[in-house]
Image (cartoon, rainbow, N blue to C red):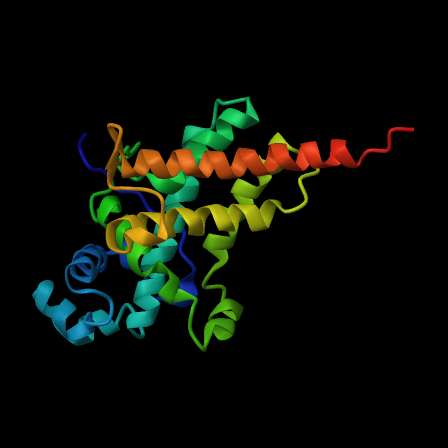
Length: 241
């Protein structure tokens, strides 16, 4: 498939100039993803990024105030991309159970792309989200970032999944908590299976299934199990007379 340009709406508080609108800006995004994957977030800085794009640090600073803003920008791009993928892949699906299964698959797997993006490698970005994504909001100044709307895309993603959960079970009491838990569970278990295997029951390959397939299977087990358990609990608590 020939690559084409897709522009997602990213919170303007994260950038000084929209990197999606210029060739240099898109190159900054593209090389940031590759460089963070290669050396890790801690070792990543604008000097190394400038060398990777054959430009100056000043040119990077014209787009982003600091490394943290650039990193959260990448996460926002990923979250917005996941929302777009869920919308696209569930557009003509009426059955909410099927829609939920599709959404769970998208949480786990970015390999089956529906569109091509010329300046972002979604699979590598997914690896970064799994490995380092929590660093965006597990820090001292998270409340200030939240006030600036840095996590609105993540909240929209969770809300979208929560809405599908309530379509499956209208009175399920914890749809938002379950939605965010499913996303974090997917990322944690992908990470654990690859780096800390004693913290998960999943393996890289098992019974001919890929790790992504196993994680999706686990999410469905947790999600539909909780929904069905909640229904069963209400039945058991119902007075007999």
